[in-house]
Image 1 (cartoon, helix red, strand yellow):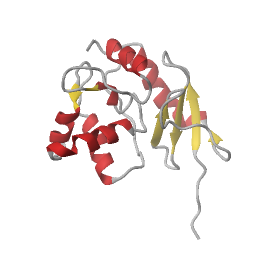
Image 2 (spheres, one colour):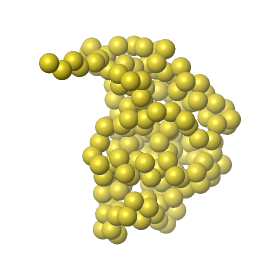
Image 3 (tube, one colour):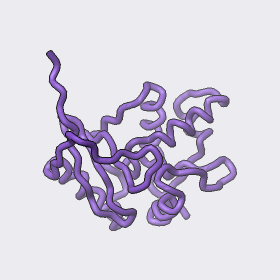
Length: 164
């Protein structure tokens, strides 16, 4: 018989609004959503509020928004296909203050040129906004393309990081 563990969650105030964080039974962060996020999570029946599980994530997020942290050091365990996980892992290689393109992410994971659209879909489905920096991915022509958290938030994050 398998035992399922309830999803633990907490909320953290931020300049982008109230962030919703979830973790698995080991404490690894599984999602970070912003209010109104396309595809973002919302608290469900049976979830357990566990602020003690998110103390370090909250501390790092506060430091990031204060301009004192450039790289997150948290255990992440998002759920997704192997392809999506490869794309999400590649986002971690985009440094603070820099941007990249969907094509560059595709090249970084060894995907073919036609796979750029699939890379865009994977970037858009990133369940760990902010800590997995999908906001650093822009269009090949330099335009700020879609962001599941809203383009206004993408602008705020890139401005905070000094890349706008």
